[in-house]
Image (cartoon, rainbow, N blue to C red):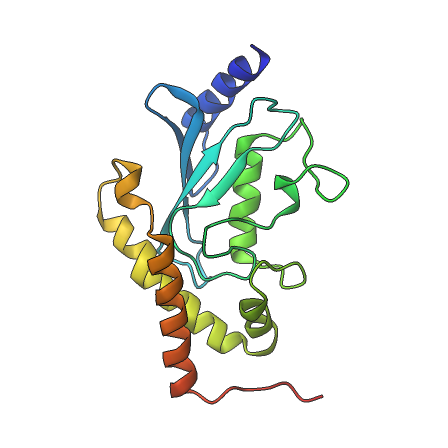
Length: 194
């Protein structure tokens, strides 16, 4: 009961006063299965992109964090090929920072901030993290290319059935590997001086 009433309040707040660049809504009649979209921030490699996310609300919410993952492929050190996100606000203590006082709006806002400022010291994708730390230009170019290929495309479609917008994870992984191989062949690796 507490979960349902809180979720209704949060969804009402998200629809009347959404954070800038973020939208969130429930799918069909299920209040525990939400979708969200985050607009890529200005001045980031994700600028102009519209990124879809899946938000699953656990039974023990707000005492457990929501399960959130990207449906739109994104080239980011803290987000893996399945869309899982490495972020403290999505984990319970002692390893995480989730508190019942947080809500879906604050978590989505913190994910938007993570997109603008990746945390290479706590990566899900070690290779992308290394690239972000030691070859930021190459990271930025790859992230922009991914945004153009995946997030701009989605922006042109009408968001409907999520199965249509959900990426084929195997295809996403293969595209990432092919793109990385192609770009590595085009540009010699820049290694840091030790």
